[in-house]
Length: 234
Image 1 (tube, rainbow, N blue to C red):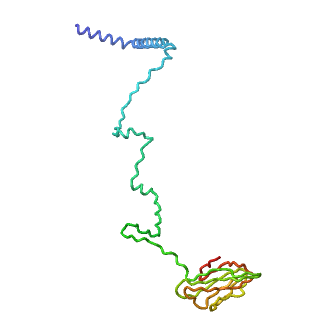
Image 2 (image 1 turned 90 degrees about the vertical axis):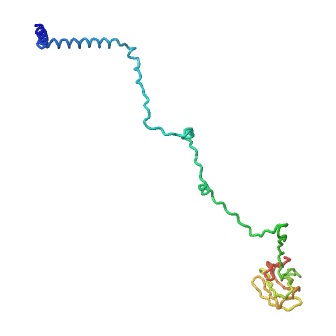
Image 3 (image 1 turned 90 degrees about the horizontal axis):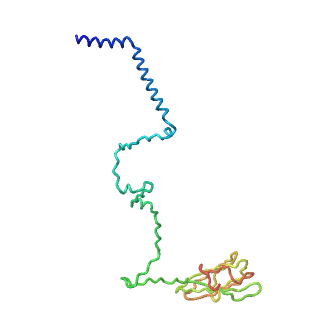
């Protein structure tokens, strides 16, 4: 009997709810009204000071770097990246960058042996040799319109030699030329002077005077040579 009563009571409550659905709707509406009133009261309770308060900052969490950090030597860490030490050039690069220095010119002079060495001989240069045949110029006589000049030809060698004298008197005229006390040679006039060639060899150690008469010219010749060597006395 008791079991039958319990079952009948449960079925009665279920039947009432099923037959009156407005009850469930009314309860839901009441709950929503209560929640709306509570929310409206909370919103009105917030004043200006509450609105002015800054929002709390969001918490920041430093995440670890997933990349593995390479091992860096202490010397590399201390060096600033903006001022890196310049690499030391190798010996090969230095030899390329160094410009070639000019090799000093070698002197053509032969150094004399140092006294006190194995060879005590001192290098002595011989004095310049004088030409075997030479001439000296002088004026013998001067007068109006011309003069008489002389070239004393001397042979310094021990053997006889032939010789040739050349004189230049620009603008002058050769009137006569001769040898004093000797066989005569050959004279050839030129535009500015004359050339005289000896007739026979001049003996070694001997001298001979070549004289000439020149008109309308300065007594000082422009040039005077004997065998290509300039005459003295000018």
